[in-house]
Length: 147
Image (tube, rainbow, N blue to C red; front, side):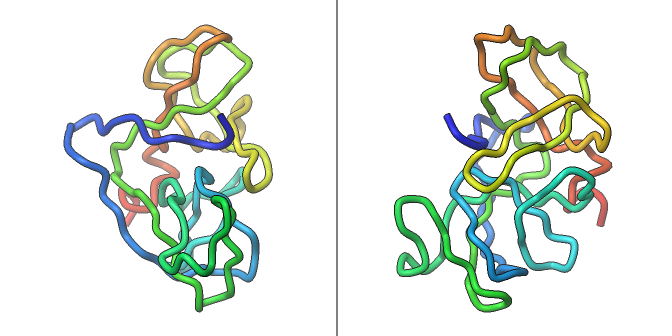
């Protein structure tokens, strides 16, 4: 599995989906985590503290091919799933304990988690190295909870 996949919300319920303009002219991939520091979305990187949630795809199918979005600054509309209490699954070659803090790592289409310095994610379920790691965006990095 490349990138992140929504699993559930801690509070229950369905995914909350919004459409946001792209911040940059760049390639994004379904399953990437987005950052929305300006109110527009771009690819999240370590140290960002306005993570909005998982990128679901382009609003206009013409802007997307096989899950890859060619976005244009302030023009392309991107669908994001952004429940503030969403739990995401991500491939991780390490065993993780509940409560561990992790960073985002990787380029578009290959994002994952790594040892923390920026603390963008918190592990919500203990996992073995052979299992997917389930994480939430940490309150300190969550766009919706920091506003």
